[in-house]
Amino acid sequence: MLLVDDNDDLRVLAKWFFDSLGFIVDTARSAEEALSRFDPKTHDLVLTDNSMVKMSGAELSHVVKMRSPATWVVMFTANPPQNRSSIDALIQKPASLLDVKDAMDRLLANEKIN
Image 1 (tube, rainbow, N blue to C red):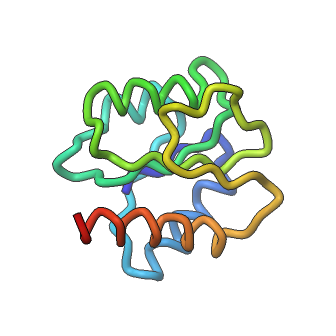
Image 2: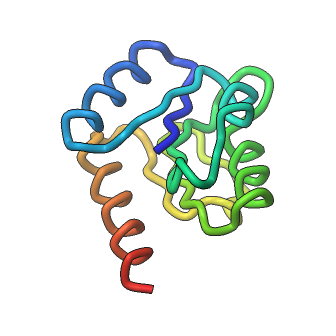
């Protein structure tokens, strides 16, 4: 999984949470950094915020889907975009990381079935 959030505290907490559940988590502080690290062979899922400084999570998800349509994109944000066509699951804050995990589990289970 590639976790993208410019909020350092939330990114570190989410990484710890998902690591403790057995996920392999790479992190990025910005959408630009995420795109430079993104590898569809390694990252079957991208978890991103929407509100970031230069490039939004919605823009990031669009580029991820252009590069790898099979990669799941989950957005965890207080500011959801109007265009959600590149987002597979949207969890609006306030919500818990358990809500995010449940959405990710559903997507990943679907992937394994097909």
